[in-house]
Image (tube, rainbow, N blue to C red; front, side, top):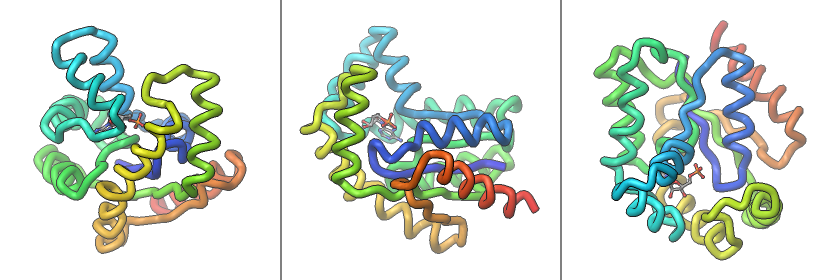
Length: 190
Ligand code: AMP
């Protein structure tokens, strides 16, 4: 089983992906984390990525696609990936389908965590206090939310059309969200 999880910044993608990963023995593939690792390496590419992330924009499709293909093509992760932060645009959604097909796989479920802009702002300021992430100022949070609305929202329809979309209320208690997601995945597993 391969799952896509998406939602605006601060929706709880990371938290819920970790939960799903542990509960169903899937590998959490976070493109944000992979990109931050690249920045930590202080490579030329890392520097370029850093300025893009800190502006609240999306990193180029090619860079992110190369990062995820390494996992999709690896037998260890075959049919046990949870994509956290990918796809973030229609072109990425199409690319993901193509990459998976090339390696004999597909997406089985697309989970959308929905939260309001007010909640996003509140959560980001909490996270700012805890983690000190360079891309977490309120101003950048709003920019990232707008990037999400513009580029990522169209992806919802893409998965709706393929009957893979399930929307979960990301404002509920974490344990309630966990339960709702568990039920949805169990239903698919049959
Ligand atoms: P995240 O940790 O998922 O919130 O991602 C942090 C930042 O990394 C985003 O704001 C983007 O700048 C970049 N990023 C993560 N995933 C992608 C992606 N699939 N495509 C382009 N940029 C991405």
